[in-house]
Amino acid sequence: MFPMRIATLNSAEDVGAAGTKVIDLDLTEVISRILIKFKAENGDDGQDDVPFANITKIEIVDGSAVLFAFNGQAGDAVNFYDLGRPEVSSWSFLDEYANEALIGLNFGRYPGDPELALPPDRFRNLQLKITYDEDVANTSTTVNELLVKALVFSGRSVSPLGFLSVKEQYAYTPTADAYEEIELPTDMILRTLYLQALDHSQWLGNSVGEVRLDEDALKTIMFDDEYYEVMKFFRPRFGKYIHKSLNEIGATATAHYRGPTSDAVSLGTPDGATERYLAQNNQFGALLSSIIDTENDVTWLHSGYLPHYVGAFPFGERNKIDSWYNPGGVKKLRFRIKGGASLGGTETFRVITQQYRRL
Image (cartoon, rainbow, N blue to C red; front, side, top):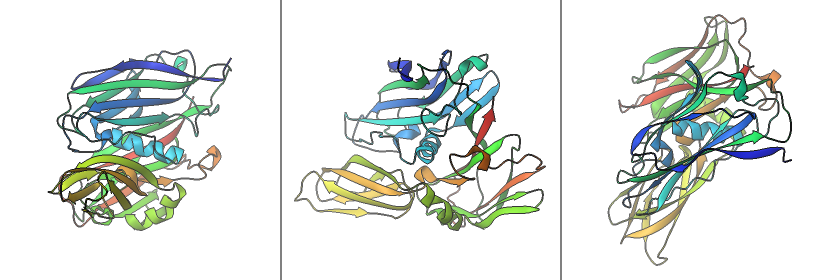
């Protein structure tokens, strides 16, 4: 018998324009990871956001207890930080093509981790909830497909010690040059702290100013510096987020979105080799404006850091549980964020934790 198998949790189906799909996680086998695919057929050549924006919320709940909670863009970023690479999603934005978001939910340090995994039979009413809106990435979309699969332990008995739980802890609208203090939970070991500062039009240093993490009224300060400077320490640990996209560009500026949002570089190859084109290529942000003499398709290769404006603050060695941050005994763990000087006023900052939840 194979030690692992791929189980179908939700067969491919059109789930309607918008709503929430609830899937019972009533398997008898232990789950290593879940893979969500949301596919949306484009109604025209426009790209209005990234494919993951069609998924507005993902949750795993057991009654009123929330084990996982984040939006699709954060989910893609966390999955990248877990695996060191993005899933091979389809960033295709030509008419009648489909954009496709693949989002992995990882309960262990790696696929098939026998020590960290999710045993559904240890819960009473475990459910996966996926909230979606099919026409965010392409506003002319009228057809979609939702498919959900799980990697489960099949041919061997495993007794996991616990699993990784990823939750949005706090969301707010920042104010330029103003501080926001967030009190983080101290009930579980912390593997990673994430900050999602989503603003397609800004360099991160303009969106986020200083960040500080401290214990018990500054008794211990883990970091206290400009956000962009702190990220210079952490982002090399995870490598670059690299993906390609297929887009239509025309004689007027055309908006294309990409995954990496820090030190991003995009190289494009037009379908017609003799056509001249200009890419107004910012080294930051997810928005790329393109101009060509006549309408043409272009294949982009995008590379950079901090996917979807999500920065990661890792603790300890990624695969060693006993090296992660244990806040036991800490009365108050505070994460302070200063709004950048050039906020547009409509951004939402989200603070997300990845914790080790013991069984």
